[in-house]
Length: 150
Image (tube, rainbow, N blue to C red; front, side, top):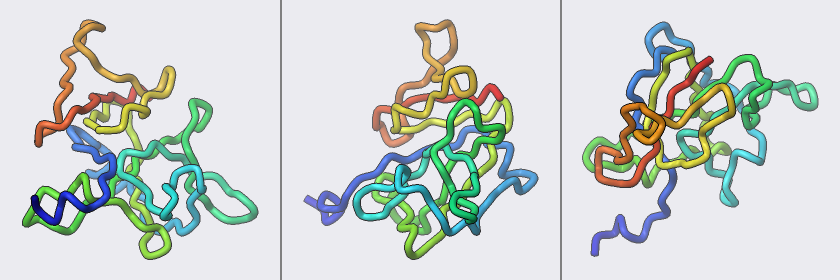
């Protein structure tokens, strides 16, 4: 048994095509995060679908709904490259600002989070709906394949 077996595990993503990374449609300096996006230790997992709103006069990262005009995917890469540490990584928002990538129609990613779909905006791709859908992450974990429609 390795010491990694004792670490908490989080949802994580594998970006297949996030076009927002190419032109720099990234938001990385927003300090306020809605409690609805955090676990009980103040950690924000990768793969959360977010929006930006002004709450009590402060720009705040909030959970996205179908009504938000612009949607973002939380994706902050872990710095550890020695070991596949994605499932052990989340951002502690008291110490670091989350990094949001603006979603652009056609963006595609895999996630261990089963709750990324938003009716009419983000669909889960699956073979039973006539799409080529992948159900396994690169390390063998069960995954969900998503596409942003717009």
